[in-house]
Image 1 (cartoon, rainbow, N blue to C red):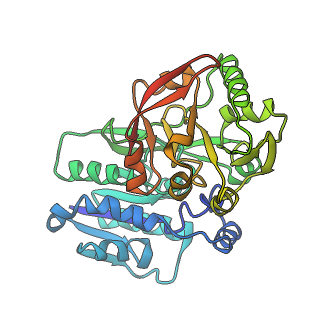
Image 2: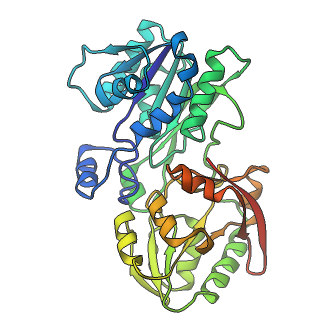
Image 3: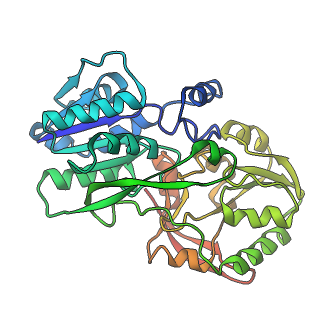
Amino acid sequence: MKLGFIVNPIAGMGGKVGLKGTDGPRVLEKAIKLGAKPESPDKAKKALEILIPIKDKIKIITCLGDMGEEEAKELGFEVDVLDEMKGEKGPEYTEKAAAEMIDIGIDLLLFAGGDGTARNIYNAIGDKVPVIGIPAGVKIHSGVFANHPRSAGRIALKYIQDEDLQIKEMEVMDIDEEAFREGNVTAKLYGYMKVPFEPKLVQNQKSGGIVGEEAALDGIGDKIVEDMEPDVMYIIGSGTSTRYIMEKLDLPNTLLGIDIVKDRELVASDVNEGEILELIEGRKAKIIVTVIGGQGYIFGRGNQQLSADVIKKVGKENIQIIASKQKLRSLEGGPLLVDTGDDEVNKMFTGYMKVRTSYNEESIHKVKGL
């Protein structure tokens, strides 16, 4: 079995530093200056670790260095490296590598990145072979990704072991990062790729707001503001649901970023992980987050600034989840999800948590740390 393996080593680097992506050299340079560190190589290894029991049955076709070779060799896999493109990096390299893997005759392509990486893979191979995305980016709107790096490995394992998985066409979606940084979400469908489908392991495409939930969110905003305690740092998560809180306070809102409020006044806007940790040092803090509709994530998608370190400092008991009943119904009984990249913190959330669904009501919802 020939397994194609591509890692975008810069995917997700903009998340914790509040840049909402790393498309383009200028943004990547800024992310590095802000202290961003590569995270996708570790996530790629989490997926590959699942395949270690059958490593003698597969040959990995991969890219040089930290684009796949290093991760696979570290785990003891036999690899063939595409070395004729030495020194090349970036989206063009990803597309060339994926196209060459098709020529070699891979059976499955496993890739680590975000929506931009998925687009590159799609541009190169279309629907010629099944793919599995290892979620490692800031923005994960596409349906070609597993819901967690280890889930990607489990799907690959099932496929390689010839379990009877349905092959399903899943969406390749991406947004305009520049517009995203300005608070505008412009998502576009670029096409479909084939994915070995395991419902519990594959991510749903992100869904938008639901008509008719405005009244509930308005009530939630009233309740959160009414209950705010003096001298507490409120870390307001991203999304349209939390926007209602900022409107009640008559404060500017970073729709797709993180804001901090104390005593009903704005302390800081669009903060990154480091800024959050500095501002809450020695102070009581609370986090208010909402749910990504259709997917269920409360941490780990689009709000990487709220990192494992931030969560540990704030404490699970000081986290408030808000969501309309309609948004919870869109999960079709599925749990809320946490994917911080820190297994200890993820496990901390497994169980049940309260979700504020209107001014007067809270519900108890299952939470799963991935």
